[in-house]
Image 1 (tube, rainbow, N blue to C red):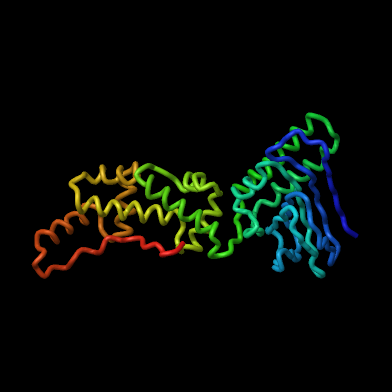
Image 2: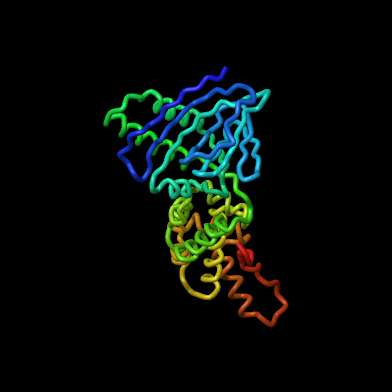
Length: 299
């Protein structure tokens, strides 16, 4: 027998994002819903077991730790597994900025599936929602706060299962690269890059790995060290000044990363550049090539 708890809300005073309903269910084997079209967004999160989710002629086999997005006015179907039926929770929501907030998480019509390792936190939030069934101003604000807390937990822990080659994902990567190239001289972190692009850090990591086979942090470090090598070669700036010009506040950290990448210290690299220029016609070993980060022609 299915064990289910549901809360439906009708009166709403918020417009950006508001809770429509929420629930928790321990499903029977092969329990299903749909095919159906819903008027609002719904996020499901699987606590235990497994099942399938079908949308747009695509079927996803999902298990504990994963979740799926249902978009408004899109026909979907989902069903619990026969041998290991799922236990899940869900929140239904709408609002003028609902689509934007989902995009911030990395979810849209092309990215419907996600992973999250914080099931205890999400379950606690939904159970707290279910406990506050009495309609009054205090509970309205409480439920609104819990909804934003749900999104906050997802933004910190969620990873999106991306579809390689999607144009929207490539746009995020291009925007991130542009930000790095314009701001590498400042002590920026990956979190700031993700904030600029408008997605969370884990989603940015997934997109970079898919498009460039490196993480955003690796890309940023390589870009900085490439610029540092160029400055060491063509200017007389001190090592400390080169480090600062490339976003390093600590010269020791810069020197360690440079040596790890180039196989020699910044000072040794500069000396080899000078020797190469002084004895350009002699048969002396050339310096190691400056690492260049070649980007794909199409991202």
